[in-house]
Length: 537
Figure 1 (cartoon, helix red, strand yellow):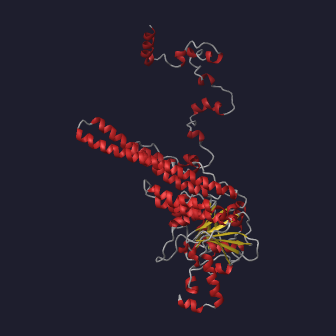
Figure 2 (cartoon, rainbow, N blue to C red):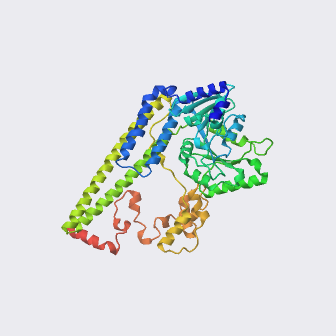
Figure 3 (tube, rainbow, N blue to C red):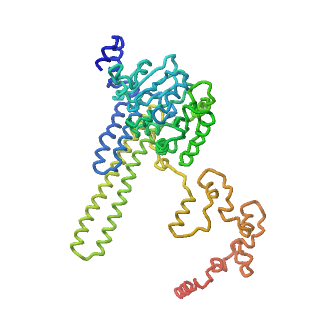
């Protein structure tokens, strides 16, 4: 490090010192200065009141919940510090380290030096790209003290993994995120979020970055572009597992990068294999597009630009409330399950206590019963306290949202439910195996598939067992606009003795044959009728 300082010119050294001072700024500034008191109140709820509540009862995953809330709070501060982001539709770029995310962004803006492509993945430094108005890119950053600072584009370009060797400093570790405004970015309502790779490929000695941070960053986006390097041959198991852990409601687009590494026919096979693999794993994607940054290649960036143009007209949803609500719901779900377990255990003690006559056993059971009641009461108190914290949290959140003119109301719990497709064939086979029933033939997969997807019901008659000729002739007129030729049979008028039993219902007449209508003339009702007559007498 001393050698690095010795080799620097005075002007470079002064610039580096000024950059370090900027990165360490801890005084309120920017738009968030107006909301500092509210932001501090939100952070107090996360850093003080929730941990205090957790000491009285919390799920095993509370550490993950707290970490997600902290990260989401940092992201919310970014939007408050730089309000331009609050009006943007965020498109997150994800993938493994060196998947080509930054290179893709550079190609979109037509500037090979727009973003740094050598950032150390362990810094977890997300970078937003928005539309700019100046010839020179404008760079803003949020530091560790949640303050907005200004960087020159040349200073931003120095934030590489070689920063320490070249300058003897690590400014990137003092920053949480960066916003780059570039006039080559053509979509005014979009913000591309370049996330650090969740793993460093092909290096066993490399430490994995914090996957939960990358997951939170992508879950905050309205759309996700996931990059798969073509030299991998297909999508990796790590990528599949990571995609499966993301919010299923966020539309996802897969881009096969570095398509120039293989012949055109090979790339076509890779694209088909990736599409087939994600479909088999139940991961829904909009499309799989090949892409190369090299000129004169058949894989143009135009298809991706068409998707960006569509997303540019989508209503923006910052997603803060859903992310915060998701963490509170995880806490609530644990408390609900814990309360149910305590109530079931208390019911068992009560039942056993009523069956035992031994005084010693009764004494022990009563002791356990009291402890169970105390635990249940404590869980009830924790539930009430959590509800109060949650209400206060979203009230503060809405207060800031009103100033930024973005909706930040607490979402309904039902709107947070995630639905997944089910395989009716496997469920039917498992049920048959469990009950010991031998199916006459294997379940027809194509018959049930339309019920699990948004497909036309081509086999509806067979599903409803209307393919039988006799049944079809009887019920067909009710399903289509045809004369009711079988009305006598449908209404049971084909029985000579019962032809007139329905007439009172249609003619507003006294029901003289009510027992026949309700089929109470059979012998199994005789005892009830006799009992009823005896009661009258």
